[in-house]
Image (cartoon, rainbow, N blue to C red; front, side, top):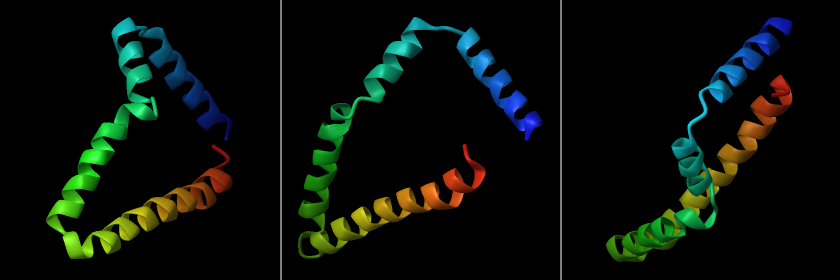
Length: 83
């Protein structure tokens, strides 16, 4: 476990040592919640337009997949590996 911790620290220090203001601004922009809202709205529109009668089922499947993968990642990985 100590080897993994040391490896993680070395990677973090290496990444942080390569400071780039452009990438910092890109990541701040990309990690904003409202940044992606227009994309989600366009996808929602396209799904409803293309699959009118099945759109509710498709949206339910997408939502279910997101919830399932989020919960699995927490319970199967995060709590097991404590990372």
